[in-house]
Image: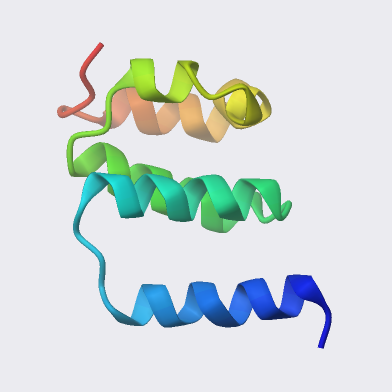
Length: 85
C-alpha cells in the first residue's frame, strides 16, 4: 500500500467519526486538496464554512490558492450565509 492509499484510509476513518469542528473540517478539505481530490476538498471546505471557517483562513493558506480560484469554491462562498471575512 502506498502513502496515498494510506492517507485515504486514514481520512476515511476521520470522516467516519463525523467531525464537526471547523479545524478538523478545514484540515480534511486541505488534505484532500493536497492529494489532488478537488471534489472532496470542496465538500469538506463547504462543511468548514458552514461551521464557521473564515475567508481569511482560506486566504492565509498558500496551498489553497488553486482551490480558491475554482469557480465551484466561489459559488460556495456566494451561497454561504456563514462565511466571515
